[in-house]
Image (cartoon, rainbow, N blue to C red; front, side, top):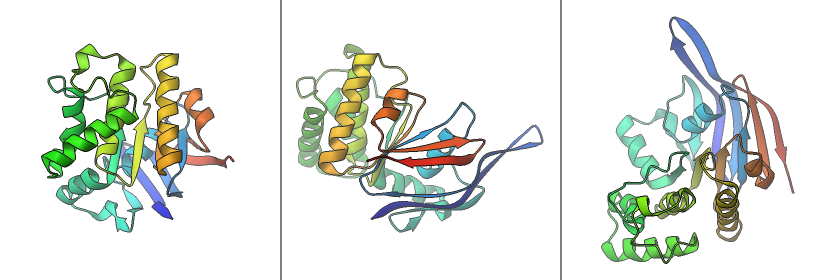
Length: 228
């Protein structure tokens, strides 16, 4: 089942009267349960492509259909609501709220969705246990390592029960051991719960784990390799 369908997607930035095509007529799709990496050199357009898929940026041309909804045609307010209920994000910067505990950070998005306190509480504890932090539910970010904070970010991304998760350079600030732990957790969630992960990355360790590698150069897809 296709969760994302992209058709002739183009993003043009106007910089000092010079038009820059960050993404140029890209067409591709993603199936439910994929573990895919978008790779390419700096300035290739991979982060822009990820931002367009996630509705964080609007295309100049083309369409992005997520689970039957063309998000490129949504108003800003409808797009915010759609992201909240359908897309999970994990960023290079962990973006945790420092005054909240691990559990409260995970619960925050569910609170925005209007879920009950009991449901928020149960799901936050379940997810923190799934990422190996069941014993740190009351710890604040400052008391946790970078790897632990990024695992909380993964739990938070999963909290909304999204259609897929977009991860932009999620291992960039992590050491080797933390990276290995984080990737093992995400791979386990992908295989056991059929959660779709799409990465934008320079990290060869992420690429090695991916079962699909999409290479982008100058806004174009130059290769799309699927692995067993």
